Length: 88
Image (cartoon, rainbow, N blue to C red; front, side):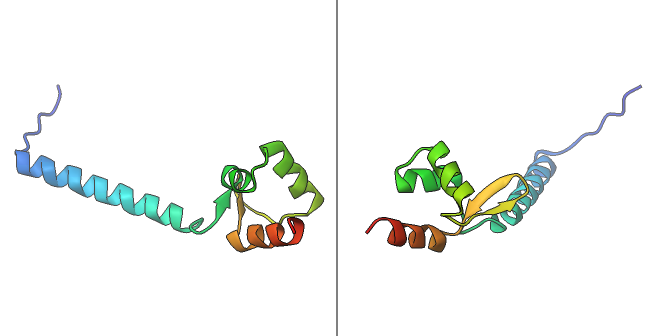
């Protein structure tokens, strides 16, 4: 036999609000670890190059990058240095 739980509209609203708030907090913590970094697509777009070209530059060590888990991230300052050194 199933248990029946009765909630007021106000109780349901509080539960939803708490769940959404907690979810946003968790997402904010995940984003803060990579905040200020650029991903591969952003860097390729900024440099106006393809992803395979970016990959070649990464393999050659021409542009520094970091890996966090499976993500490849770039410091904006490293991208700026690359542009300054290679596009004179």
